[in-house]
Image 1: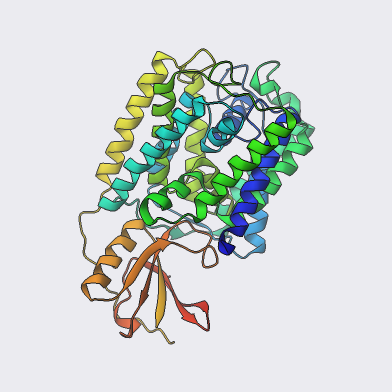
Image 2 (image 1 turned 45 degrees about the horizontal axis):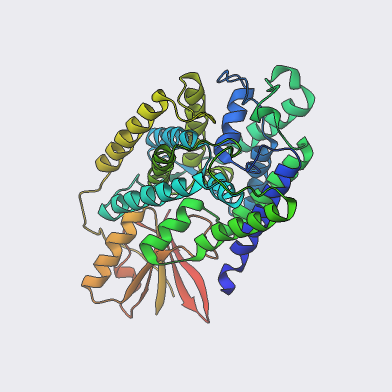
Length: 361
Length: 78
């Protein structure tokens, strides 16, 4: 229990902040949603033209900067990359396609349930199934191969982009797009969002919180460390929502959600499957990219471009439900992710022993 | 001696765990403890008196040894 303290604390804080951000203006059950916020940011930059979802979310900027500063302080900023970058980009792309079918990343999935949105249950069942499928590939020998140490400057790029985006947001907003109505127009005050993001970035970097990793560890090792953080988010957000009167139990008329159980299931199934192959949920990818993991940074770019495609080609669901194009895209996603899984299974089960190692104990 | 080996890839750890099992070395595959690394890989914990220099595989990123209740890094692949 003691070793779980840090991550439970992190989960509690994230749950509470999420509830407060909704109170302060963020869309319902969307205090935090990495998928939605990257999508909104892509919209603000004009990468897609869905007018209801355009806003540079300071939460994302805060998460990146918070995790970056924390990793520097803890001497954990290590710039590495080169582990199947384009494959990771494609996986990130389809994580977003799945998330926008369901309307939320794994973090928002848990926040939706904590707000009483029972549609999230189908998402959770799908997410569990997707992770279960991904774990089978891992055990069969799936691997995206190791990474290499890269120049430090490579790792400074993403945090720099985050800083530039924030400067644009506060000093030159006229060059960005802003939603006038819809979810993109609902947001907490800029600095509150930024500080919330910073806190989450710091804590998530310290604790390694990961929504997909938690379930993976339970399935593979019966290890409950990571999932305890995930559960803490739920409990804190549930209590917060009940206290603030934001809890509404049911399936119908939930904020930014639809009631198609099958496609909620399949959307999050795709997210879980691809996330396990990537080694982490969208939040975790964002944290890793801030720590200098370039493969994760490429994954984040895949998420962003996935969001742009989702809105340019009508793949994202709305409160009215999923679209036909979206359903086709999710099916294609399952095929592509399965192919990636299959073709990256290592055939050799030999362990190669290194020669001339000199370790002094 | 009790060791923890951290791997570049998931499958590297799975293979190594089987390798140790074939050598009758007790081992446990598990997530990397936060205190050892901020990465989200998996690691193999094992206890053996065999010379560690003879069982370092190419898949291993780093090795830690348990000394006085604390894991200390003794090997880092470059």
